[in-house]
Length: 311
Image 1 (cartoon, one colour):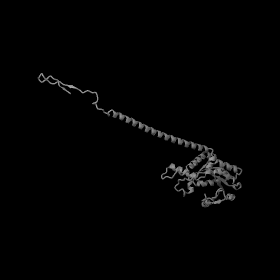
Image 2: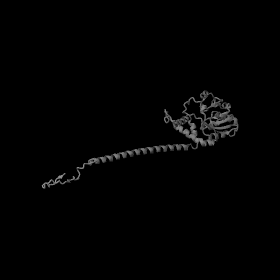
Image 3: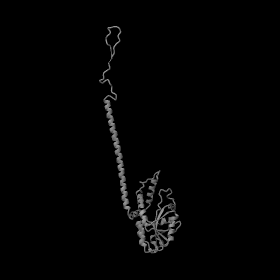
Image 4: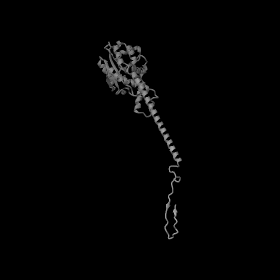
């Protein structure tokens, strides 16, 4: 933004003067709030949800007259209600609710040198014109993201939280569960699925816990998602244990069947050997020899009447 616009910043909780100087923007301390606001046409409030109400309550209302206030919280219902409550009686203060989804893919090969505006290409930014009197100024501000080729999505805060809040909470929850480097170690060969998990883990690792806690506190479904996640994990553990037990039992049954077959085969061979082999000799049986009786031919001598038996 500082390349095309005059940008000033202020952080009441931390000293960001060094970072501001490196980025080429003006930095104001917390006790210079009035001087800080006087130079601005658009005031962007970029703080975690749990700090948003306190931050808005500390802004001087008189110094915000005629300006556009833009909030960038990850959920919309709570900041919208806070702004309307704080400035509902000041119609001269314009209110724009936005959710820029500009997370940079951590697996980008040129992550450290990548141009920030080019990384916005195709990224969605959800917005709602809560109360706009100066339409031209609002359009100029949104044109910054249009020039960066962002995907502009207009929807109410209620529609946003109904469709986006749960997805954002689950995404950040998954990223924090995988933030341990031992869970996703670097590998020489990486699949698309693994790269996607690394992107989620790295993108959420740069966010503060306050941001994540705000997603939890101001999302009515957050606790249900945590319970569902625990139940799903328990179901997976039970399925893994059941499959492991089934495979072990199947292997044990196969081993038992093999041992039984070997024992039966051994017993049969022993019985065969005990009975004299597969083809026992016939000399030990009770069979009788065949006897062949033949009559000799007469030779003329009457005395040769004796019978001759051939065995």
